[in-house]
Length: 99
Image 1: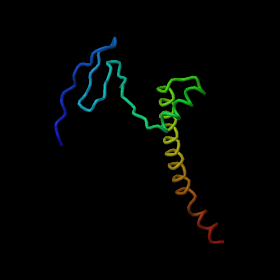
Image 2: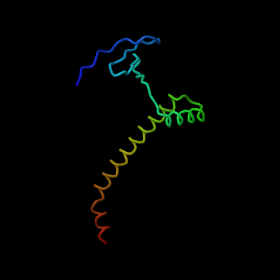
Image 3: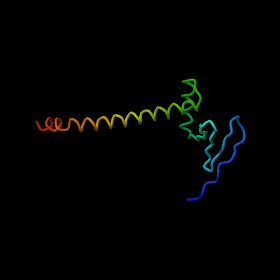
Image 4: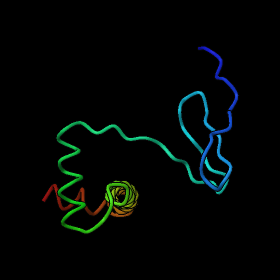
């Protein structure tokens, strides 16, 4: 793999920011800025949702990512819980299944 160039200063904005060789800008507050290049379908969906919800495209994307993150965490908790219940009740489940 090629070596990445060191971060460089990005002009503009009140907070000092750097841009990596990958094109990801980071602001000193810890926030990361990036560009989303939506296709026509996503752009249309973003526009409709932004209008209906009275929010910016950025806010719609933010909500969607956080919602997906929460669902993924919830699914993991459910899987872990189901695994524990199967371990705990496997003998009973086996007996019920053979009746």
